[in-house]
Image (tube, rainbow, N blue to C red; front, side, top):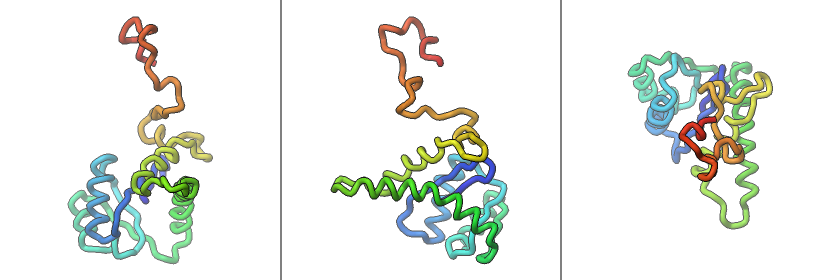
Length: 161
């Protein structure tokens, strides 16, 4: 799971195995290509991040790679705290679907992340979506997202909120 300190945006990518090659590819293809290349990354010292493949990726995109130590409690606390809420959302949804038609976890993950990103952060009062893009995403329960009925449409400007 990846997150941005300022916006509180979190990104989670479903992978089958956490080898250095898979993690670096997921980071490049699913994060850097969609959200841009960060100035620096902060990772733990696990084999996936402390690898030649990750060094090559960071060197290619000129990303400064910082590793936190296992006993640096302040950094570990921040990571653990930021991972807690999406993990709880995921667990509660999966547990609630034990009636035989449980979705695959990798298909459920993007929906859980959408809920998390669309929930206001307690400190800022803003959603990660707003902090990242400067506007809120339309969610299915919001009536302003649905286009007007055809009888109400007079011109194209009727579709503009």
